[in-house]
Image 1 (cartoon, rainbow over the protein chains, first blue to last red):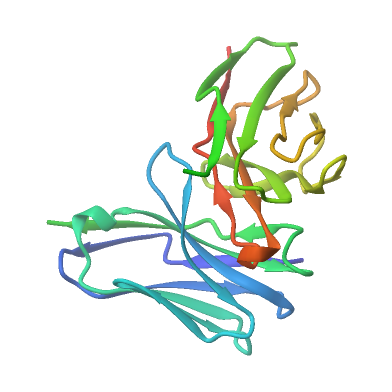
Image 2: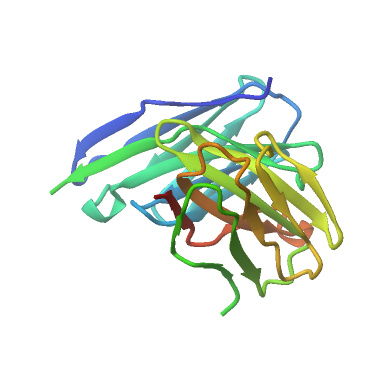
Length: 113
Length: 113
């Protein structure tokens, strides 16, 4: 069964700290790995997408890596800010990409001023 | 700007009623999806459609129905057969041109009264 696990479930850090969110997946036939942000009561905002042929992607203060051999992805957030507080979700797609994403349950991040 | 519009934002259903959630996109994406989000359970796939006039069941399709008569529209009907419909419903779309990166709508919160 295809599963995606995110650890930790919640994380609280002081402003300015660099942090890493972890994501592990069981299906090695990965098509892509996507990271999203969700604010309370809102939809999901796409942050980064890593194709199976790539090792990492960067956008501003965010960097996501992909290691297919170990079934892991990490989201690195540099110089965290209170506005980064949200739930971060990772999701894996397989089978050509268009069929479905399997989501982890998310990491709830709180950045304290 | 292109995007996905879900309506209504909040919906209340009486016992035994069918209700329809709207999802419209102007992104010219071929694939569309419906997910359900419950606290502590993450996002679960209800139905998806890769092309007009075709759709497939996801992991939790029982008690739901969909149609895909137009590329832009993918409405979801929650039938009276769905015994626990209270949840946050998210619609998404994707396209091969963007490596099947997902774009999400802002969601509909359905409550049974």
